Image (tube, rainbow, N blue to C red; front, top):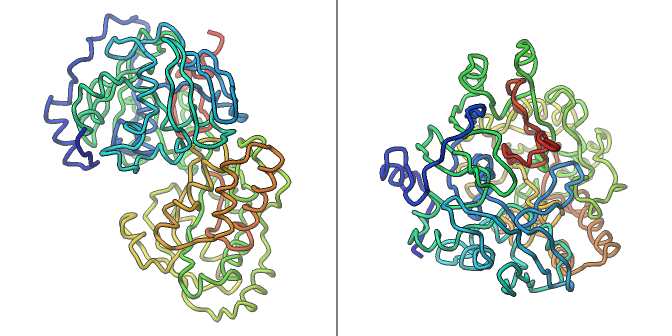
Length: 523
């Protein structure tokens, strides 16, 4: 396989190969049930790639989640329980070994049957490590404990890990663990060609895409999970929220993404429309460059957090529809959730005290800010500026055009970020943002040897009680002892749709329009 780079030039070239990139090797869709309609979705951004191991970008996840399946899946309830997917069942052999029994009768979009070779290849370094096996693929943050996949027979594989791994089942249900066609991957010849038209087993197959304009999917009627509820999905890229709203109101689309709370009341004016969505496994925060002389002081960092009235913030900007986490964790983590860890405190008096003890004298703290990359980002920043000013913090906004500018060294600032849990456990969440191989650490803006050691210990600990002890100490470090960020709130994903469109949101950024969506349960 040749080197791959995600660039607009690559995508344009791929699109030029066939108009809107009609892909060879995929059989034409047979006649569909006339009662099914094409779902029209207006979304804010265009997928940078269609290969799941390369990126967790929101636009990519919204499209690609329709195209692929994992061996095991989450049920998308708040409990995030595991359920069978391409694996009809599985069993633990030891702390490092999981036997997986594949479902029979699964077909890829190109008509080939799912095989154990496809599974072994999908979870191999040749695929997971990305182009040139460079180790930069997003999936490795979740699947780096996998050592190899052993083929037992035509329907059975054994997944071996490098270390004891209590999270293996969750890893195999998470983003990046999607099963691809080995034959189609090898036939593509290089990563650019493959990533523009990958072949999966999901309820919808990729038909065409037009850079920054649209993505077209068609129903995969041989889907193992049942007939897809829509004949196809037409994703239209409509960057501006007002334009997406107008398209929905005018009946040009059935569903829109990235709805800001201040638009909820507008949607509610139309009886045929409704708001959908809610909290997802993502936390919004402000990264801190702790190498800055002022921001390096723990008291200043804690004061930045203590000065924020999060309950008022969420109520005013999000109509109270988001949760405020107690530390960098989420309830969906199950046994790994430290439910009695103290809530984030609003204490302006303590903030003032810590600033005095830190010797803070009103020095300017820079807030590098994008223009509403996140919903309510600018308004939220302005609200926080006033809260900080009330305790004596002098925070000044510096507008940036893109994340390249925001993260250009030396940063010497605070800036917005969000962290999605790639699996419901701190190793798939906080560790991705603050761990020893995280972007924050590589950029040099934060580091804590004790935290890194605890994280490595956590990876190898299977006992629930011991894991909880480690996790509590890690929370203490990131919340009080050496904060790398200011936690704002759990993120939400809100949508607007036609009331006659049957669909239920899940706990992740993914959009599931397939027959296994909870809205179709029991049908």
